[in-house]
Image (tube, rainbow, N blue to C red; front, side):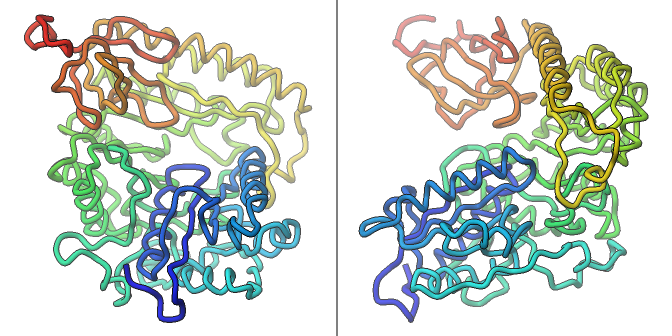
Length: 496
């Protein structure tokens, strides 16, 4: 550990991460920057000199959770607790000085542009200096309009950090990949950022305003980080971004993802690569082929449908509809019948009619998706849809959410039952005796179901993969037995 020249004792920091897997990557970059500058990372906020809360600012519920977490951390301050509580992340970037003024319990609000100097900023805040929060701006204006011109832009993009700074290189390994990231857990699964930002203009979404225009990470950086993660014991990589299907367009090759996926699957130690955040309108046959035929790449499709009624989708500034979506699903299952397909849908969008909801129900019934998140629409600051008329009454939205949720629970349970008898490969994440919990190829962390595996043996360790046969279901969750268990010795040491 290298001490900062301005301090005589090591200061401790706790990082609390909220929101999506993209935020997890950002937190681990912040952790690397802080540790390289002499901060000691601790898990318990009560043991820290500073608590940094990486907030989520996507929808109202996430904002509330972020505020509650900041307030809880502030309650710990005192003679033996943290001296400072600092907000970073999407909520902090989105609201800046407004958040700082409305939440005096937080000692500072840092935006994305503060990330390269986060260690110095935090040290000053702990010392009692007042940090002036930024005035938010539309981060899309910081980048050239043309995607291919963005590579030369000098804009801070969380999760895209490099070790160009000599002070950070000094703390990197003497050999192997040099990655600006410090793992905050020992899970065998880790998110890996492909890109940041989005060029789409969905009427309900504010993310591009505070995350900026779409920017791909270079393939060499992505592969180097994948190798580093494998060295840390990661066996499954979850590729994340705001829109993975656009990967490479700003690097001059819209088919770069088809080349990158096999390269990542070939990284020593990595046994499964999972791609997330796909736009249906940008799916292409070659990408479907790679996702359904490449060894080590999960046949998994996280497709952002959002609705199925063409009229609602057009008001959302999106494309497609029931028939186009069903054709895409049919094309996927023609190549890989066992492929996992999940999505999210929004009900109660301004102008949505009963007929539109019926159309969405028809799509979901015919699509037979593995997992579906159902969300009720709410106005978001700075979005086009917030200015729309024909708003749906909150009580009606709640009724539609309940109605769709009931349907989805029934349909996804039926889809799970279709897998009985299927041979699956499960990443084991916990075990108790001869029983364990993990995920098959169609089950992503956090958002999908899981698989309970029976008849584990001594050879089946947490963090490893288990071949199993599905024997039952519990809603979307699967129950399975280890495959070919008669050929091995059971955990009790007797014949299986």
